[in-house]
Image (tube, rainbow over all chains, first blue to last red; front, side):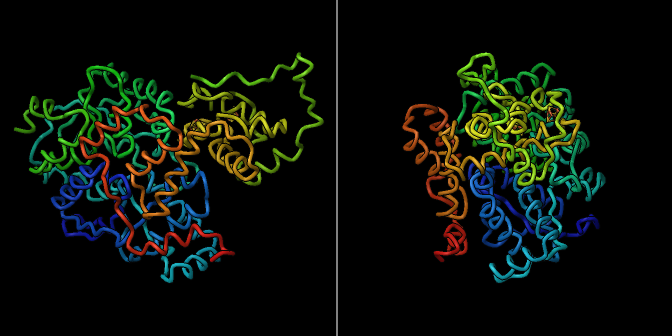
Length: 287
Length: 196
Ligand code: SF4
Ligand code: SF4
Protein backbone atom coordinates (compact mmCIF):
# COMPACT_ATOMS: atom_id res chain seq x y z
CA UNK A 1 0.00 0.00 0.00
CA UNK A 2 1.19 3.51 -0.67
CA UNK A 3 1.03 4.24 3.04
CA UNK A 4 4.74 3.89 3.63
CA UNK A 5 5.15 7.31 2.10
CA UNK A 6 8.76 7.96 1.35
CA UNK A 7 9.54 4.95 -0.78
CA UNK A 8 8.84 4.50 -4.42
CA UNK A 9 5.48 2.83 -4.57
CA UNK A 10 4.18 0.80 -7.45
CA UNK A 11 0.60 1.31 -8.55
CA UNK A 12 -1.27 -0.04 -11.56
CA UNK A 13 -2.69 2.92 -13.41
CA UNK A 14 -5.89 2.98 -15.45
CA UNK A 15 -5.88 6.16 -17.60
CA UNK A 16 -9.22 5.69 -19.38
CA UNK A 17 -10.27 7.02 -22.78
CA UNK A 18 -10.42 10.73 -21.92
CA UNK A 19 -7.02 10.94 -20.30
CA UNK A 20 -5.60 8.97 -23.20
CA UNK A 21 -6.92 11.43 -25.79
CA UNK A 22 -8.86 14.66 -25.24
CA UNK A 23 -7.44 15.21 -21.75
CA UNK A 24 -3.88 14.11 -22.46
CA UNK A 25 -2.64 17.13 -20.51
CA UNK A 26 -4.21 15.62 -17.41
CA UNK A 27 -2.44 12.33 -18.01
CA UNK A 28 0.96 13.93 -18.56
CA UNK A 29 0.71 16.19 -15.54
CA UNK A 30 -0.48 13.31 -13.39
CA UNK A 31 2.55 11.22 -14.37
CA UNK A 32 4.75 14.18 -13.59
CA UNK A 33 3.22 14.84 -10.17
CA UNK A 34 3.31 11.16 -9.28
CA UNK A 35 6.97 10.94 -10.25
CA UNK A 36 7.85 13.89 -8.04
CA UNK A 37 5.98 12.28 -5.15
CA UNK A 38 7.91 9.07 -5.63
CA UNK A 39 5.02 7.03 -7.01
CA UNK A 40 5.63 4.62 -9.84
CA UNK A 41 2.50 4.52 -12.00
CA UNK A 42 2.50 1.45 -14.21
CA UNK A 43 -0.07 1.77 -16.98
CA UNK A 44 -2.39 -1.21 -17.07
CA UNK A 45 -1.17 -3.27 -20.03
CA UNK A 46 -3.63 -3.10 -22.98
CA UNK A 47 -6.51 -1.66 -20.91
CA UNK A 48 -9.87 -0.99 -22.55
CA UNK A 49 -12.77 1.40 -21.99
CA UNK A 50 -14.21 1.04 -18.47
CA UNK A 51 -17.71 0.47 -19.83
CA UNK A 52 -18.75 4.14 -19.93
CA UNK A 53 -22.22 5.53 -19.38
CA UNK A 54 -23.28 4.80 -22.94
CA UNK A 55 -22.52 1.09 -22.90
CA UNK A 56 -24.06 0.79 -19.46
CA UNK A 57 -27.23 2.29 -20.87
CA UNK A 58 -27.35 0.11 -23.98
CA UNK A 59 -26.09 -3.20 -22.65
CA UNK A 60 -25.23 -3.72 -19.02
CA UNK A 61 -23.62 -7.12 -19.57
CA UNK A 62 -21.19 -5.88 -22.22
CA UNK A 63 -20.37 -2.93 -19.98
CA UNK A 64 -19.75 -5.26 -17.07
CA UNK A 65 -17.47 -7.51 -19.12
CA UNK A 66 -15.54 -4.51 -20.41
CA UNK A 67 -14.86 -3.39 -16.84
CA UNK A 68 -13.95 -6.91 -15.79
CA UNK A 69 -11.43 -7.35 -18.61
CA UNK A 70 -9.49 -4.48 -17.07
CA UNK A 71 -9.64 -6.14 -13.66
CA UNK A 72 -8.32 -9.35 -15.22
CA UNK A 73 -5.29 -7.44 -16.49
CA UNK A 74 -4.42 -5.96 -13.10
CA UNK A 75 -1.67 -7.70 -11.13
CA UNK A 76 -3.29 -8.58 -7.78
CA UNK A 77 -0.46 -7.45 -5.54
CA UNK A 78 -0.62 -3.75 -6.30
CA UNK A 79 -3.57 -1.35 -6.09
CA UNK A 80 -5.29 -0.30 -9.30
CA UNK A 81 -5.50 3.47 -9.44
CA UNK A 82 -7.80 5.55 -11.64
CA UNK A 83 -8.08 9.29 -12.06
CA UNK A 84 -11.44 9.54 -13.80
CA UNK A 85 -14.21 9.24 -11.18
CA UNK A 86 -16.53 7.55 -13.63
CA UNK A 87 -13.95 4.90 -14.58
CA UNK A 88 -13.31 4.31 -10.89
CA UNK A 89 -17.03 3.86 -10.32
CA UNK A 90 -17.49 1.36 -13.14
CA UNK A 91 -14.40 -0.64 -12.19
CA UNK A 92 -15.40 -0.78 -8.55
CA UNK A 93 -18.99 -1.62 -9.26
CA UNK A 94 -17.90 -4.53 -11.45
CA UNK A 95 -15.45 -5.72 -8.82
CA UNK A 96 -18.11 -5.62 -6.12
CA UNK A 97 -20.36 -7.76 -8.27
CA UNK A 98 -17.57 -10.31 -8.75
CA UNK A 99 -17.05 -10.49 -5.00
CA UNK A 100 -20.79 -10.91 -4.42
CA UNK A 101 -21.28 -13.53 -7.13
CA UNK A 102 -18.58 -16.23 -7.06
CA UNK A 103 -20.07 -18.03 -10.06
CA UNK A 104 -19.90 -14.84 -12.14
CA UNK A 105 -16.30 -14.44 -11.03
CA UNK A 106 -15.48 -17.95 -12.20
CA UNK A 107 -17.26 -17.42 -15.52
CA UNK A 108 -15.36 -14.20 -16.12
CA UNK A 109 -12.05 -15.83 -15.20
CA UNK A 110 -12.77 -18.50 -17.79
CA UNK A 111 -13.78 -15.89 -20.35
CA UNK A 112 -10.53 -13.99 -20.06
CA UNK A 113 -8.33 -16.95 -19.19
CA UNK A 114 -6.82 -14.92 -16.37
CA UNK A 115 -7.38 -14.94 -12.62
CA UNK A 116 -9.13 -11.97 -11.02
CA UNK A 117 -8.31 -11.19 -7.43
CA UNK A 118 -11.30 -10.59 -5.14
CA UNK A 119 -8.91 -8.61 -2.95
CA UNK A 120 -7.75 -6.21 -5.64
CA UNK A 121 -7.95 -2.70 -4.24
CA UNK A 122 -9.27 -0.08 -6.64
CA UNK A 123 -8.53 3.46 -5.58
CA UNK A 124 -8.64 7.03 -6.76
CA UNK A 125 -5.56 9.18 -7.04
CA UNK A 126 -6.89 11.40 -4.25
CA UNK A 127 -6.84 8.41 -1.93
CA UNK A 128 -3.20 7.83 -2.78
CA UNK A 129 -2.45 11.44 -1.84
CA UNK A 130 -4.39 11.17 1.39
CA UNK A 131 -2.43 8.06 2.32
CA UNK A 132 0.85 9.71 1.44
CA UNK A 133 -0.02 12.34 3.99
CA UNK A 134 0.46 16.11 4.22
CA UNK A 135 4.13 15.96 5.18
CA UNK A 136 5.13 14.36 1.90
CA UNK A 137 3.14 16.93 -0.08
CA UNK A 138 4.58 19.87 1.82
CA UNK A 139 8.04 18.51 1.34
CA UNK A 140 7.56 18.51 -2.44
CA UNK A 141 6.12 22.02 -2.61
CA UNK A 142 8.14 24.19 -4.98
CA UNK A 143 5.68 26.80 -6.21
CA UNK A 144 3.39 28.00 -3.47
CA UNK A 145 -0.02 28.60 -5.03
CA UNK A 146 0.09 32.05 -3.53
CA UNK A 147 -3.52 32.38 -2.49
CA UNK A 148 -4.95 31.28 -5.85
CA UNK A 149 -8.71 31.35 -5.37
CA UNK A 150 -10.22 28.21 -6.83
CA UNK A 151 -13.47 26.30 -6.71
CA UNK A 152 -12.84 22.61 -6.00
CA UNK A 153 -15.27 21.12 -8.49
CA UNK A 154 -16.10 17.49 -7.82
CA UNK A 155 -18.94 16.96 -10.24
CA UNK A 156 -21.49 14.29 -9.51
CA UNK A 157 -19.67 11.03 -9.11
CA UNK A 158 -18.36 11.66 -5.62
CA UNK A 159 -22.04 12.01 -4.84
CA UNK A 160 -21.86 8.40 -3.78
CA UNK A 161 -23.68 6.31 -6.30
CA UNK A 162 -25.66 4.04 -3.97
CA UNK A 163 -23.91 0.93 -5.32
CA UNK A 164 -20.70 2.21 -3.77
CA UNK A 165 -21.98 3.15 -0.36
CA UNK A 166 -19.25 1.14 1.32
CA UNK A 167 -16.40 2.76 -0.62
CA UNK A 168 -14.02 5.47 0.42
CA UNK A 169 -14.92 8.95 -0.72
CA UNK A 170 -12.88 12.00 -1.13
CA UNK A 171 -15.26 14.64 0.04
CA UNK A 172 -13.31 17.84 0.51
CA UNK A 173 -9.93 16.34 -0.37
CA UNK A 174 -9.38 18.37 -3.55
CA UNK A 175 -9.69 21.47 -1.41
CA UNK A 176 -7.57 20.08 1.44
CA UNK A 177 -4.67 19.10 -0.77
CA UNK A 178 -4.55 22.38 -2.64
CA UNK A 179 -4.95 24.40 0.57
CA UNK A 180 -1.82 22.69 1.81
CA UNK A 181 -0.08 23.88 -1.33
CA UNK A 182 -1.13 27.50 -0.79
CA UNK A 183 -4.46 27.74 -2.63
CA UNK A 184 -7.68 29.18 -1.22
CA UNK A 185 -10.71 26.94 -1.83
CA UNK A 186 -14.11 28.53 -2.32
CA UNK A 187 -16.59 25.87 -1.39
CA UNK A 188 -19.87 27.70 -1.61
CA UNK A 189 -20.13 27.51 -5.38
CA UNK A 190 -21.93 24.62 -7.08
CA UNK A 191 -19.11 22.17 -6.41
CA UNK A 192 -21.14 18.98 -6.88
CA UNK A 193 -23.47 19.90 -9.72
CA UNK A 194 -23.35 17.40 -12.57
CA UNK A 195 -21.55 18.82 -15.64
CA UNK A 196 -24.02 17.36 -18.13
CA UNK A 197 -22.09 14.22 -19.01
CA UNK A 198 -23.07 12.81 -22.42
CA UNK A 199 -25.93 15.27 -22.86
CA UNK A 200 -23.24 17.75 -23.80
CA UNK A 201 -22.93 15.91 -27.12
CA UNK A 202 -26.57 15.19 -27.90
CA UNK A 203 -28.48 17.94 -26.06
CA UNK A 204 -26.16 20.90 -25.71
CA UNK A 205 -29.27 23.09 -25.32
CA UNK A 206 -29.96 21.40 -21.96
CA UNK A 207 -26.36 21.51 -20.78
CA UNK A 208 -25.35 25.08 -21.58
CA UNK A 209 -27.63 26.80 -19.02
CA UNK A 210 -26.47 24.32 -16.37
CA UNK A 211 -22.81 24.86 -17.06
CA UNK A 212 -23.43 28.60 -17.01
CA UNK A 213 -25.08 28.24 -13.61
CA UNK A 214 -22.05 26.41 -12.27
CA UNK A 215 -19.68 29.00 -13.69
CA UNK A 216 -21.78 31.92 -12.48
CA UNK A 217 -21.74 30.48 -8.96
CA UNK A 218 -17.95 30.35 -9.12
CA UNK A 219 -17.74 33.94 -10.34
CA UNK A 220 -20.13 35.07 -7.60
CA UNK A 221 -17.79 33.58 -4.98
CA UNK A 222 -14.89 35.51 -6.43
CA UNK A 223 -13.12 32.50 -7.91
CA UNK A 224 -10.23 32.87 -10.31
CA UNK A 225 -10.50 29.35 -11.64
CA UNK A 226 -12.02 25.91 -11.11
CA UNK A 227 -10.10 22.75 -10.37
CA UNK A 228 -11.65 19.39 -11.19
CA UNK A 229 -10.63 15.77 -10.87
CA UNK A 230 -12.81 14.63 -13.78
CA UNK A 231 -11.64 15.07 -17.36
CA UNK A 232 -15.15 14.99 -18.77
CA UNK A 233 -16.25 17.75 -16.38
CA UNK A 234 -13.24 19.81 -17.42
CA UNK A 235 -14.19 19.52 -21.08
CA UNK A 236 -17.91 20.13 -20.61
CA UNK A 237 -17.31 23.20 -18.47
CA UNK A 238 -14.91 24.55 -21.07
CA UNK A 239 -16.92 23.93 -24.22
CA UNK A 240 -20.43 24.63 -22.91
CA UNK A 241 -19.88 27.86 -20.99
CA UNK A 242 -21.18 30.91 -22.86
CA UNK A 243 -20.58 33.48 -20.11
CA UNK A 244 -17.83 36.07 -20.35
CA UNK A 245 -15.21 36.38 -19.02
CA UNK A 246 -14.50 32.66 -18.94
CA UNK A 247 -12.69 31.28 -15.95
CA UNK A 248 -9.93 28.78 -16.67
CA UNK A 249 -10.65 25.20 -15.61
CA UNK A 250 -7.74 23.10 -14.45
CA UNK A 251 -7.31 19.41 -14.15
CA UNK A 252 -6.41 18.73 -10.54
CA UNK A 253 -3.21 17.00 -11.66
CA UNK A 254 -2.06 20.13 -13.52
CA UNK A 255 -2.27 22.37 -10.47
CA UNK A 256 -0.72 19.69 -8.30
CA UNK A 257 2.18 19.12 -10.68
CA UNK A 258 2.69 22.86 -11.07
CA UNK A 259 2.90 23.33 -7.31
CA UNK A 260 5.30 20.42 -7.07
CA UNK A 261 7.63 22.13 -9.51
CA UNK A 262 6.88 20.56 -12.91
CA UNK A 263 8.38 22.56 -15.77
CA UNK A 264 6.76 21.26 -18.96
CA UNK A 265 3.40 22.94 -18.32
CA UNK A 266 3.43 24.90 -21.58
CA UNK A 267 2.31 21.82 -23.49
CA UNK A 268 -0.62 21.23 -21.12
CA UNK A 269 -1.96 24.73 -21.02
CA UNK A 270 -1.91 25.28 -24.79
CA UNK A 271 -4.44 22.45 -25.01
CA UNK A 272 -7.00 24.37 -22.95
CA UNK A 273 -9.86 26.09 -24.72
CA UNK A 274 -9.71 28.82 -22.05
CA UNK A 275 -6.08 29.82 -21.75
CA UNK A 276 -5.06 29.69 -18.07
CA UNK A 277 -1.61 31.19 -18.62
CA UNK A 278 -2.50 34.88 -18.06
CA UNK A 279 -3.95 34.00 -14.65
CA UNK A 280 -0.95 31.90 -13.66
CA UNK A 281 1.49 34.52 -14.87
CA UNK A 282 -0.35 37.24 -12.94
CA UNK A 283 0.01 35.06 -9.85
CA UNK A 284 3.72 34.58 -10.57
CA UNK A 285 3.21 30.85 -10.88
CA UNK A 286 4.64 30.64 -14.37
CA UNK A 287 7.08 32.86 -16.19
CA UNK B 1 -36.74 23.43 -25.98
CA UNK B 2 -38.54 21.42 -23.39
CA UNK B 3 -40.61 18.52 -24.67
CA UNK B 4 -44.34 19.15 -24.87
CA UNK B 5 -46.24 18.70 -21.64
CA UNK B 6 -47.49 15.14 -21.18
CA UNK B 7 -51.04 14.45 -22.27
CA UNK B 8 -52.46 13.49 -18.91
CA UNK B 9 -55.69 15.40 -18.67
CA UNK B 10 -57.89 13.44 -16.31
CA UNK B 11 -61.07 15.43 -16.99
CA UNK B 12 -60.93 14.92 -20.72
CA UNK B 13 -62.92 11.81 -21.56
CA UNK B 14 -60.65 10.87 -24.47
CA UNK B 15 -57.62 10.99 -22.21
CA UNK B 16 -59.21 9.35 -19.23
CA UNK B 17 -56.96 6.83 -17.62
CA UNK B 18 -58.66 3.84 -16.13
CA UNK B 19 -56.27 2.54 -13.53
CA UNK B 20 -57.89 -0.86 -13.50
CA UNK B 21 -56.87 -1.22 -17.13
CA UNK B 22 -53.21 -0.41 -16.57
CA UNK B 23 -50.29 -2.75 -16.12
CA UNK B 24 -50.63 -4.06 -12.58
CA UNK B 25 -47.28 -5.78 -12.73
CA UNK B 26 -45.17 -2.83 -13.81
CA UNK B 27 -44.28 -1.56 -10.34
CA UNK B 28 -43.37 -5.06 -9.17
CA UNK B 29 -41.27 -5.67 -12.29
CA UNK B 30 -39.37 -2.42 -11.94
CA UNK B 31 -38.81 -3.07 -8.26
CA UNK B 32 -37.35 -6.49 -9.00
CA UNK B 33 -35.24 -5.40 -11.98
CA UNK B 34 -33.85 -2.23 -10.42
CA UNK B 35 -33.41 -3.61 -6.93
CA UNK B 36 -35.00 -0.53 -5.42
CA UNK B 37 -38.35 -0.35 -3.67
CA UNK B 38 -40.18 2.49 -5.33
CA UNK B 39 -43.40 1.83 -3.43
CA UNK B 40 -41.80 3.71 -0.53
CA UNK B 41 -41.94 6.96 -2.51
CA UNK B 42 -44.29 9.46 -0.92
CA UNK B 43 -43.78 12.11 -3.59
CA UNK B 44 -42.00 14.67 -1.51
CA UNK B 45 -40.33 15.84 -4.76
CA UNK B 46 -36.87 16.21 -3.27
CA UNK B 47 -35.55 14.27 -6.24
CA UNK B 48 -36.97 16.74 -8.71
CA UNK B 49 -35.69 19.71 -6.76
CA UNK B 50 -32.17 18.37 -6.95
CA UNK B 51 -32.15 17.03 -10.51
CA UNK B 52 -30.01 19.36 -12.64
CA UNK B 53 -31.74 18.25 -15.84
CA UNK B 54 -35.34 18.62 -14.82
CA UNK B 55 -35.82 21.47 -17.30
CA UNK B 56 -35.17 19.10 -20.15
CA UNK B 57 -37.58 16.46 -18.85
CA UNK B 58 -41.26 15.96 -19.59
CA UNK B 59 -41.91 14.34 -16.20
CA UNK B 60 -39.94 15.09 -13.02
CA UNK B 61 -38.21 12.04 -11.49
CA UNK B 62 -41.03 11.44 -9.02
CA UNK B 63 -43.47 11.78 -11.92
CA UNK B 64 -41.79 8.82 -13.55
CA UNK B 65 -42.14 6.89 -10.31
CA UNK B 66 -45.82 7.81 -10.22
CA UNK B 67 -46.31 6.51 -13.76
CA UNK B 68 -44.73 3.24 -12.72
CA UNK B 69 -46.83 3.00 -9.57
CA UNK B 70 -49.97 3.53 -11.63
CA UNK B 71 -48.85 1.01 -14.20
CA UNK B 72 -48.77 3.56 -17.03
CA UNK B 73 -46.27 1.53 -18.96
CA UNK B 74 -46.36 3.24 -22.34
CA UNK B 75 -46.10 6.73 -20.85
CA UNK B 76 -43.13 5.75 -18.72
CA UNK B 77 -41.25 3.92 -21.45
CA UNK B 78 -41.90 6.58 -24.07
CA UNK B 79 -40.97 9.49 -21.81
CA UNK B 80 -38.15 11.91 -22.56
CA UNK B 81 -37.11 11.96 -18.92
CA UNK B 82 -35.62 8.46 -18.89
CA UNK B 83 -33.20 9.41 -21.69
CA UNK B 84 -32.39 12.89 -20.40
CA UNK B 85 -31.38 11.36 -17.05
CA UNK B 86 -27.58 10.96 -17.04
CA UNK B 87 -27.46 8.86 -13.89
CA UNK B 88 -25.72 11.51 -11.79
CA UNK B 89 -27.44 10.09 -8.68
CA UNK B 90 -28.16 13.51 -7.23
CA UNK B 91 -31.76 12.43 -6.71
CA UNK B 92 -30.84 9.03 -5.25
CA UNK B 93 -28.71 10.73 -2.62
CA UNK B 94 -31.35 13.28 -1.72
CA UNK B 95 -34.27 10.87 -1.46
CA UNK B 96 -35.39 10.63 2.18
CA UNK B 97 -36.70 7.12 1.47
CA UNK B 98 -33.36 5.98 0.01
CA UNK B 99 -34.92 5.11 -3.33
CA UNK B 100 -32.33 4.75 -6.07
CA UNK B 101 -34.24 6.75 -8.67
CA UNK B 102 -31.34 6.62 -11.12
CA UNK B 103 -31.63 2.82 -11.08
CA UNK B 104 -35.35 3.10 -11.86
CA UNK B 105 -34.53 5.33 -14.83
CA UNK B 106 -31.93 2.85 -16.02
CA UNK B 107 -34.33 -0.07 -15.76
CA UNK B 108 -36.97 1.81 -17.74
CA UNK B 109 -34.43 2.58 -20.48
CA UNK B 110 -33.63 -1.11 -20.74
CA UNK B 111 -37.28 -2.04 -20.99
CA UNK B 112 -37.84 0.67 -23.60
CA UNK B 113 -35.05 -0.77 -25.76
CA UNK B 114 -36.12 -4.34 -25.14
CA UNK B 115 -39.75 -3.74 -26.03
CA UNK B 116 -38.96 -1.59 -29.03
CA UNK B 117 -41.21 1.32 -28.07
CA UNK B 118 -40.81 4.76 -29.64
CA UNK B 119 -37.66 6.32 -28.14
CA UNK B 120 -38.47 9.90 -27.23
CA UNK B 121 -34.87 11.13 -27.47
CA UNK B 122 -33.57 9.40 -30.57
CA UNK B 123 -30.53 11.68 -30.82
CA UNK B 124 -29.35 10.68 -27.37
CA UNK B 125 -29.81 7.03 -28.24
CA UNK B 126 -27.90 7.55 -31.50
CA UNK B 127 -25.03 9.07 -29.57
CA UNK B 128 -24.87 6.09 -27.21
CA UNK B 129 -24.91 3.74 -30.21
CA UNK B 130 -21.93 5.53 -31.73
CA UNK B 131 -19.98 5.22 -28.48
CA UNK B 132 -20.77 1.52 -28.43
CA UNK B 133 -19.68 1.20 -32.06
CA UNK B 134 -16.37 2.89 -31.29
CA UNK B 135 -15.68 0.58 -28.37
CA UNK B 136 -16.59 -2.42 -30.48
CA UNK B 137 -14.05 -1.31 -33.08
CA UNK B 138 -11.18 -0.08 -30.96
CA UNK B 139 -11.87 -1.19 -27.41
CA UNK B 140 -11.72 2.48 -26.49
CA UNK B 141 -13.75 5.54 -27.40
CA UNK B 142 -12.53 7.61 -30.31
CA UNK B 143 -14.17 11.01 -29.89
CA UNK B 144 -13.70 12.32 -33.41
CA UNK B 145 -15.04 9.14 -34.97
CA UNK B 146 -18.02 9.15 -32.61
CA UNK B 147 -18.88 12.76 -33.35
CA UNK B 148 -18.56 12.36 -37.13
CA UNK B 149 -20.69 9.24 -37.28
CA UNK B 150 -23.17 10.81 -34.90
CA UNK B 151 -23.46 13.85 -37.17
CA UNK B 152 -24.17 11.60 -40.14
CA UNK B 153 -26.87 9.83 -38.19
CA UNK B 154 -28.70 12.89 -36.95
CA UNK B 155 -27.91 15.01 -40.05
CA UNK B 156 -27.01 18.10 -38.05
CA UNK B 157 -23.79 19.06 -39.74
CA UNK B 158 -23.56 22.60 -38.56
CA UNK B 159 -24.83 22.35 -35.04
CA UNK B 160 -21.85 22.74 -32.74
CA UNK B 161 -19.41 23.12 -35.60
CA UNK B 162 -17.55 25.91 -33.77
CA UNK B 163 -17.01 23.74 -30.70
CA UNK B 164 -15.82 20.85 -32.86
CA UNK B 165 -13.35 23.04 -34.72
CA UNK B 166 -11.99 24.56 -31.54
CA UNK B 167 -11.47 21.08 -30.13
CA UNK B 168 -9.67 20.01 -33.28
CA UNK B 169 -7.48 23.10 -33.21
CA UNK B 170 -6.46 22.29 -29.65
CA UNK B 171 -5.91 18.66 -30.61
CA UNK B 172 -8.59 17.61 -28.18
CA UNK B 173 -9.81 15.14 -30.77
CA UNK B 174 -7.22 12.79 -32.18
CA UNK B 175 -7.39 11.84 -35.84
CA UNK B 176 -6.42 8.26 -35.17
CA UNK B 177 -7.96 6.11 -32.48
CA UNK B 178 -6.10 4.66 -29.55
CA UNK B 179 -6.68 0.91 -29.79
CA UNK B 180 -6.65 -2.19 -27.66
CA UNK B 181 -4.11 -4.66 -29.04
CA UNK B 182 -6.03 -7.82 -28.20
CA UNK B 183 -9.08 -6.42 -29.99
CA UNK B 184 -10.60 -9.86 -30.59
CA UNK B 185 -11.12 -10.09 -26.83
CA UNK B 186 -13.34 -7.03 -27.13
CA UNK B 187 -15.23 -7.69 -30.36
CA UNK B 188 -16.13 -11.16 -29.08
CA UNK B 189 -18.23 -9.49 -26.39
CA UNK B 190 -20.45 -7.94 -29.01
CA UNK B 191 -21.36 -11.19 -30.74
CA UNK B 192 -24.40 -12.93 -29.26
CA UNK B 193 -23.47 -16.18 -27.50
CA UNK B 194 -25.31 -18.35 -29.99
CA UNK B 195 -23.33 -16.93 -32.91
CA UNK B 196 -19.87 -17.26 -31.45
S1 SF4 C 1 -37.18 12.07 -3.18
FE1 SF4 C 1 -37.72 9.90 -2.95
S2 SF4 C 1 -39.62 9.89 -1.74
FE2 SF4 C 1 -39.31 11.99 -2.49
S3 SF4 C 1 -40.50 12.07 -4.41
FE3 SF4 C 1 -38.40 11.51 -4.97
S4 SF4 C 1 -38.38 9.29 -4.98
FE4 SF4 C 1 -40.22 9.91 -3.89
S1 SF4 D 1 -29.83 10.60 -11.72
FE1 SF4 D 1 -31.15 11.31 -13.38
S2 SF4 D 1 -33.09 11.88 -12.41
FE2 SF4 D 1 -31.54 11.74 -10.81
S3 SF4 D 1 -30.77 13.81 -10.54
FE3 SF4 D 1 -29.41 12.79 -11.99
S4 SF4 D 1 -30.24 13.24 -14.03
FE4 SF4 D 1 -31.84 13.74 -12.51
